[in-house]
Amino acid sequence: MTASASSPPKIDRPLNVIVATDCGSTTTKAILIEKVGDEYRQTYRGEAPTTVEAPFEDVTPLRKSKSSPVVRF
Image (spheres, one colour):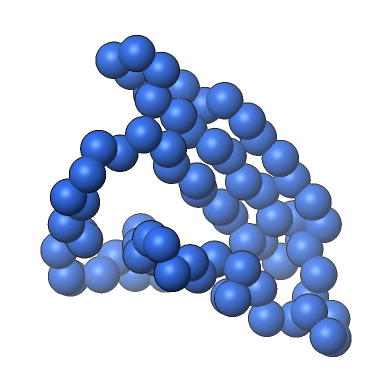
């Protein structure tokens, strides 16, 4: 995967929670990072087998949300 040449999305409100996911071919992992006081801390972590067979072979819709943009690194 290559980095995008476009600039990151503008955030117009405080960033208090970050969800990061890694949808791999065998395992999907997710972490939750929350602002605690003046610093950010990883508060939760989870993983599960990735489903790569029908009817769930496309994991892309799981990453998309109407409330926040998808950013690729």
